[in-house]
Image (cartoon, rainbow, N blue to C red; front, side, top):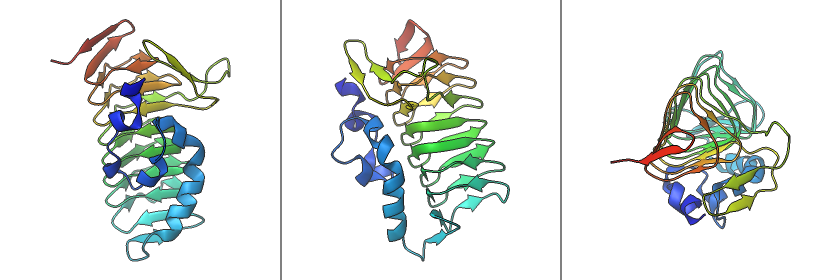
Length: 221
């Protein structure tokens, strides 16, 4: 599973939450600690750069937040980020610099690295999205199995028991997810990979791949 470690998936210089990942091997290990990390980091943010809005919600002065968006704390909205009409941030969310959270998109217990785009009708729960990851309209991170069992990350050669009931998806840097796709619980997508529209993804997808459908994953040329 070495290809799906934090080091091989994400550039930690592209998130304000770098410290959250230090000392951990896999990105999903940060999920239980997001809330406490935001509460700690938020109190250290410069009042010259961030406004404290409501209870435990820090919004960069350079960010654009639509008046119809709802943000529940703890949450941090980074510099130059955009939170659009009717976005719903349920709490425990870090939105990176220059990121876009679009209309009717819902976030919950997640980290969006810088320049991430979830611009139209997306659900991102219990997930980590790497630098410049993009989710097409209507694509979601499903975070609970239908049988409610604990999530297992399944690679080609081995599997990892996470001990978590809620675990969405881990997207490496520059991942493109096509419109209407479902990333099932425990999905891990390697850097620079593309997911075809209307895909139903399970398990781990290697770096630099094109996912066409289950059993049809090809290397980018």
